[in-house]
Amino acid sequence: MRNQSKTSKSPRRPFEKERLDAELKIIGEFGLKNKREVWRINYTLAKLRSAARELLKLDEKDTKRIFEGGALLRRLHRIGALDESKNKLDYVLGLKVQDLLERRLQTQVFKLGLAKSIHHARVLIRQKHIRVGKQVVDVPSFIVRTDSQKHIDFALNSPLAGGPPGRAKKKKLKAAEAREAAGEGGEE
Image 1: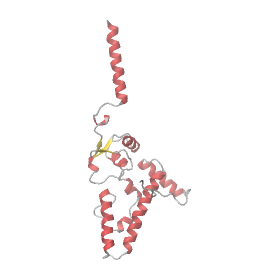
Image 2: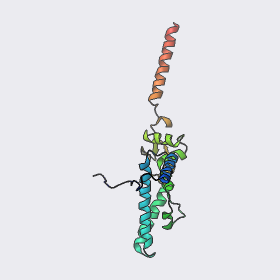
Image 3: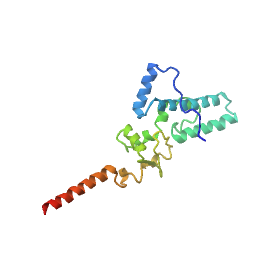
Image 4: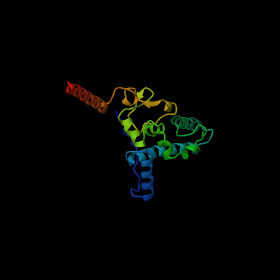
């Protein structure tokens, strides 16, 4: 059975100029496909913040706050959205959309220099040229954990990593062979 819960939430005011401009800037900076990708991250961030707010209401010695707060902070440390030194729930409230967008595979591929641009990174990921560890990942919004960040590389069967040549390369090689064969046949 597929998960039917919402992943994004559209804004209450659809034509608010400041928000529209800010969203467009984020889309350009991180190479997103559409506004829904921004809204999805905003929704995730809102859920994280509300969980932190609920826990901050409780007493500091409360077991629920200790366990759930610790789990929330560990999760954010593991994906790299929150620095290891920031080990308080108050820092969760200070998280920005950019902090989560920085952890996407698309952004990481570009930052590592595997792609020429942020848009090129998206194309490489969609065309299955990128792997994380041993697993080929073709989802640009894949959130990269800090421990798997150093394992991002080209896929083993990708032409970019020295694998078998791609369609265009094969076509060029075949055309070059045909020219050579025609050249040798014409000299006799």
